[in-house]
Amino acid sequence: MSEPKLIVRNLSKIYEDTNGAVTAIEDVNLEVKESEFAMIVGPSGCGKTTLINMIGGLVKPTSGQVILDGKEVEGPGPDRGMVFQGYSLFPWLSVQKNVEFGLKMKKVPAEQRTKKAAEYIKLVGLEGFENALPKQLSGGMKQRVAIARTLANEPSMLLMDEPFGALDAQTRVVMQELLANISKQTKTTILFITHDIDEAVLLGDRIYVMSRRPGKIRDVIKTKLPDIRNHDCLVMPEFLETKKQIMDMLWQESNDAAMDR
Image (cartoon, rainbow, N blue to C red; front, top):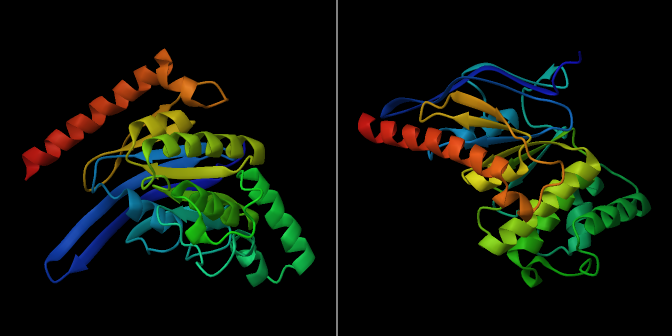
């Protein structure tokens, strides 16, 4: 049996400043398989973003290991594409040029990068907007550009930190369905952080539920939804059952955190 694509082993992070030491996450272990869509959900302040930033190589762990494709992560790298809540687009570049940017930095020939960018622009449903500037796009469209730009670089894994958190409810569901479809088409391995339980259950093949700070993995849930994920899933008994299970855990964690203060 092949090794998981991503292995997080005994990962901890302690931040130290003039006020003392704060343990953000402690002894976190998780695995993500090839082509799996894994979710991380937890109470506010549990260290979700710290965790994904360590996997991305942006934050150095205090202890433990992050292993991707059999190699230990020691810093940022092109094997991990990251998408954040902020769109991080270059406002002076068109949609086409934004998507091409990473390919240009990798010195991909102009004709080849133009063709590849066009493929991913089509994948995210932005055909016809190639020459538009970010200021001419809605929030959902900007995030589509950010996803296309990241995928065009063909990373080994996609890391997403609350990418739809700033969108309105209707646009958010549209983007969730789009991402679910893209993950099936491209077979991209995804690790996605969210505070939204509906989002976690709708998108995830596997859901890691974190405890209050210091964040640990409290439970791992495998979803039972069909392969095709869309808004129809939101009323399925399997969806509601899993949502209730996670809600109960997070409710307990939040109450326990309040009692700790």
